[in-house]
Image (cartoon, rainbow, N blue to C red; front, side, top):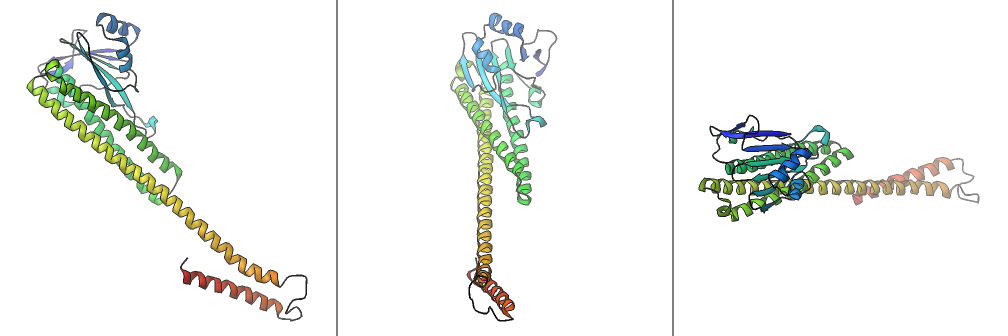
Length: 304
């Protein structure tokens, strides 16, 4: 599906027909792919990479345009079951237009930052900046969910809560790899500012973008370390609880063995003391109870 936009009165707005300088292709069909590869001479491999969610972020300098694969958060839905994924977006910057290629439809220019743009390169950088803040929004959600899960785990050690934590930790691994890849791409843009032709204002925006992306990476790393530590702590607690349970069961077993031994000793089919005593049953039962009490006192004194 094709959507066209243009810079009108300093704002990115929808353009009628195909006259806009910003062309967004969402899940392009074969005809649109042919237009991109044949008419615009976009490399077919790079085009397919922009539709591959597992593709790494990168930048390539072509003879008549700049090709970039950028990683952004995938739109989250309840069907994802707390798994936050990343996807790829292709940006192809020509001298007179920008081509955006994505595997899913995106609300590209709804952010207020696009109400004041000066050039196509400014639009490109603000698309990157919008993705960074999209990551930050998702990280806040992940942090809120993890805190809620932590409270639930403190009340109940059900496996589903631990599995949810594992899913969030997996999401953060995706985010860390994607943000790190974007960081490398942005640094390459910084190294080739003169070749790309950035203005001074655009260079300042790029610097801000690099800083924001770095902070986003650090925040993701902090949340990932917290979740990892939380998972390790819960595993240690479960292991410790199991050890305490086994210790208690062993003590109970030993406690049962003492009176069992006393009773068994007086139930052998041989001559034994007290066999003709009319109070033998009471005496044997008393010995068994005394042995249990003695064992309990010994247990308390040892503070097992």
